[in-house]
Image 1 (cartoon, one colour):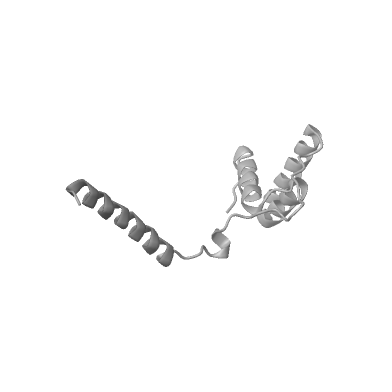
Image 2 (cartoon, one colour):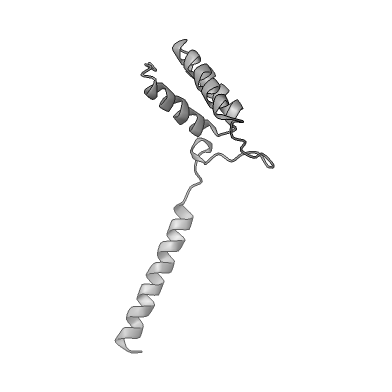
Length: 103
């Protein structure tokens, strides 16, 4: 065997060894770190009209002004069908746009 072939074999073995070590030491992500998936058959339905957008936003603002951030997120999720993270981000964006304090 020449030097080039030996070097190639060493590189291949290192790649395979790295892959095996990675698979052995890999751990499954905890449930709270996994991306959320909608239920089978669920589809996103956007609000019916721009008026619905304004109504939803005004309801969210009302709940935020009452220090009910969780209720605002629940409401947003019910009306839009988005996941928890997306709803939380949207509600926080509404609060920033409206200069509401979320403490």
